[in-house]
Image (cartoon, rainbow, N blue to C red; front, side):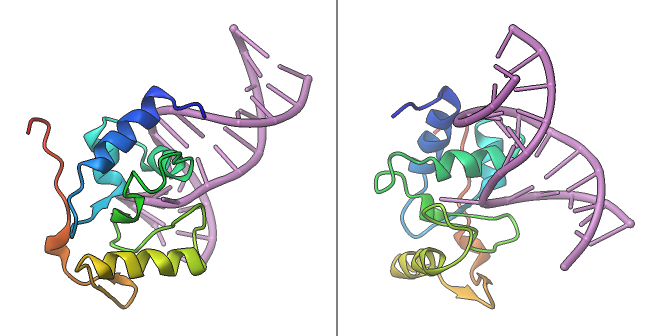
Length: 109
DNA sequence: AGTCGCCACGAAG
DNA sequence: CTTCGTGGCGACT
């Protein structure tokens, strides 16, 4: 497994997401100073720390679930919703029900 | 090393 | 929904 410095930042940021909260790709990208949320998605897709990094807590800025386990749609995607639901996150009409659940990255602590 | 295509996104039309 | 833009990685040359 080879993890690029960029990916390291992504995982590090995602690890900061507390249970019961969700962050957006853009939010993560901005937190690590990426600018291109797609790069974040690629990093998460490559996510070698699958169970360690809560990639399921990362959704799109549109509040749509996004992808999971390398699948933009399908059963894996549904699993993502189940995991989030298990943490108190609820989705409605395919979008995040409680916007207040959005996680905010702090540059300091 | 240089170039092209791919990506779990985002913004605008 | 469709089109363009962004940043980074993998594969090919």
